[in-house]
Length: 292
View 1 (spheres, rainbow, N blue to C red):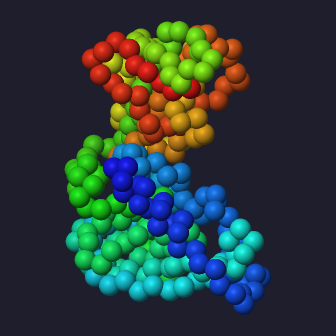
View 2: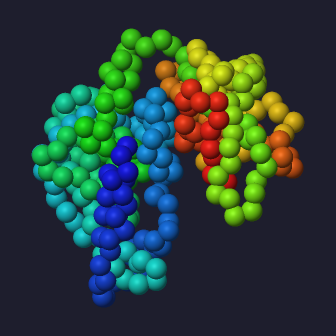
């Protein structure tokens, strides 16, 4: 996803709150500006469709056109003050239903919690959402919903699901730092960790992938299930980004992406290899740069 669209989402979401009086705090949600979107995954705009479509918070995926939008003011308590935020009810004509959307017309609910996606009437969207008990579909700024014009790769994957081979794929990158960290230096040089082994531990069997000369690794046709992905190294290992889990529930025809930096100059911490979605640039050059 391009940066301008992601920036627009966050701007809209964080500016819809308006002060209002006479609201009883016990009747409305209490929200802070730095809260995460309830029930959603972290906002990773570059996550591939083979991962996005199978996230726990996603149960409905479709391509459609927004034909009607109704706004509703919702009272909240924002940073201790009474406020209003906007909730959208968006009617869609479904052009293609991929997962969990057999209907030709659906209603998407968004907002009411500072996480609203800024839908516009008449535009086409690839919607990733969560089916509610009401039958409506909830989508937020972190549900990976995007304009159709930005969804070329997603649509290619989704349209080929019916003929895709069974099994899941785990892939990513592994790079090796070639110099110690320096004070007041933002980046460090690294090279592809060629030959490095990546361990993929399943419930009943373990697998191994090998990093190639470009710093990439992949293993396909994995049975659906839970896996723990780690680097077989005596050196410290840093994942990018550092906050996600090394555990993945891999869906059939789904994928998971991991990116690692190996630091032979650092003291090794207890094993912890969070999952990541941001890939260091893989080029023909033998080195790469990674910010600390």
